[in-house]
Amino acid sequence: MTVALVGYGALGKQVRYLLENSGKRDFILFDDPALSLKEPTARAFHCCVDPEFAMADFYICLGYLHLEKRREWLRKLLALGRRLPALVHPSSFVSPTARIGHGAIVYPGCNIDQHVSIGDGTLLNNSVVVSHDSEIGEGAFLAPGAIICGSARVGAGSFIGAGTVVSNGIRVGEACQVGAASLVAVDLPDGSSAIGNPLKKLDRPLKLT
Image (cartoon, rainbow, N blue to C red; front, side):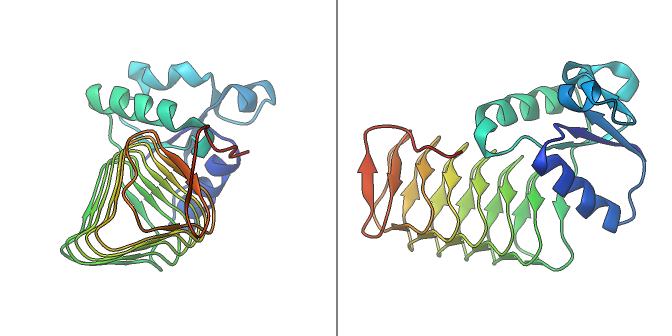
């Protein structure tokens, strides 16, 4: 089966490594810089919607700086009927009662507890914990070591920084940005930016670069 990687920066290379270790070998890279560097099998980014690639398995490899674009391409490819299988590393634990959405990527060492819902296109980086009855929205990005406690919710398109803890029952809205090593013990409305322990809400977006 041909594997199509949409984006081939650092995240795309990580995903390719994970897939190669699971036995995948036939890759097409949809990435303009990779094309300019004459990477084998590279195509222009926009070509991923071409009918000739309709039978490939697609993985969206746009990182945390491009969360809106990630969701846009997720929806576009799903609307075209493309296959977007979830990628779950075998070292991760996933409860039989958990739901993993289309195109979700779960890195090594994650723990996804009972009755958890992981939305389409969501990425859980290394050693993320999502406790019981929690929900992670479409296209969210959880950085390494993030902990989502029981019955919490992280909205679509949100970024949760490395080592951050979202407390039991807390609601993080859509398109939020929470910086590394934060403790989220209060609800955050859509579009919030916050960082720290104790948590400080910001009047500007986090600088994630």
